[in-house]
Length: 571
Image 1 (cartoon, rainbow, N blue to C red):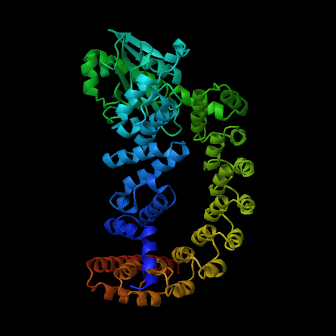
Image 2 (cartoon, helix red, strand yellow):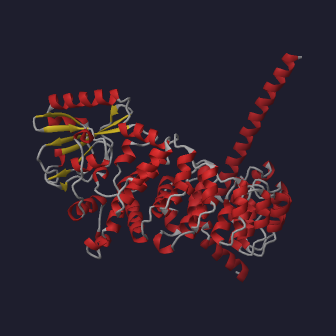
Image 3 (tube, one colour):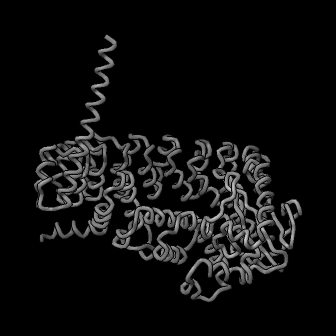
């Protein structure tokens, strides 16, 4: 094997091309959009972050698409929440052990208590995280070591609906009320995310959710510690006006340990008659509110009133807990479709860097707020603006004149960046900028992509070979590239000329023949030859592509026939 080929093969391994090809072969029945998305996850998880934090590309090859997506989004969310690497690493270990763990469970049940642990780590043994086995164990430890002061909560905020036989039914109106109900004897005795005493509390995430109608009712046995009897405190969740039992651990209907609560168990604990009575009261209350918690209407009014919104966010306590609650409040406000441009503008000038980051990254942020953030003193904020597809092209053109490499990469990645801006960035001395330009779907084909096809860096040329806008004549030239990865991408590209694909179909490397066999631009006669290949995967791919071409031709024939019939009727 010559040195050039060896170098190319090693580079393929580093770029995770081999593992992603293995993954695609195992999941070839998936839609092409998911296959493309999986490739992005592979590259980002192995190339964009700290290697020690993430599994290797080989490990990723064994995951399903759902697991891969959950892992990727977990890492992204953890970064945005400023969760440190050792805590993210613990989550990835849990994801491997619990393959059915959903992204929503990770965001709601894992990241918040880990943030609390990160904040209070001095209260725990140095090796606590290393020996931690489950999130349930973590929550119990936090209950014992992390407590909150008594909160001033009015009777109205508690939302007491009924009391009978030592049981009390609540519909808490506020985060503070939810936390107080979650205590017995002044100490928290539930593991619910909605009763956490710090900024990781998720009460508003449920009750004020912009896209879900959720009402949480708490059923509490008076004076009984739920640590000794988990069913002394039960949460019964209503979604869209109806009770939702049996959602599993961590659902909206659970006992104090966050274990699943079904209706049969609820009736067994309270007794059939009292359970029926309480459920009827809950149903009537949810119906009177049209399934919406009062917090949602309060949110709608606030996000449409800039002065009231400013007063609200200025009213949070200035300690760490208050700062965290303020951020959670703002994060939820950003999700509301009713949030006005004026409120976004207020947040674009917020002194909290985390808030400005959220606004800069949001796809709901209007152009005027993004224009303010494009001039932010913080480089990270400007980088997020550069990535945001809602940023006006002229704003991206201004950001393209910056010197910061990460901002330039972001502009080069953004599909809304103007062709002329991308052409200017293609001349950058930084290869990472050029390779992003080479991959951008908005990069001019006949000029800029042609020039980048001759770039000295093989990754830049590889991205040109991948780009759907690269002209056929350029791909024909790249088919003779010395780098194996570049030539493989040419074999995949739908723009590659049929005659070039036919030549590649005769390559001794089965990888080339497989990619050519999957390419819909490969001539039928070449596919017919590949359908007789000695390699089973190649035969399967060629037959599948031939069937897709036949189906496409049949569809076109049916459409043409309908058009002709209509024309004939109109004559």
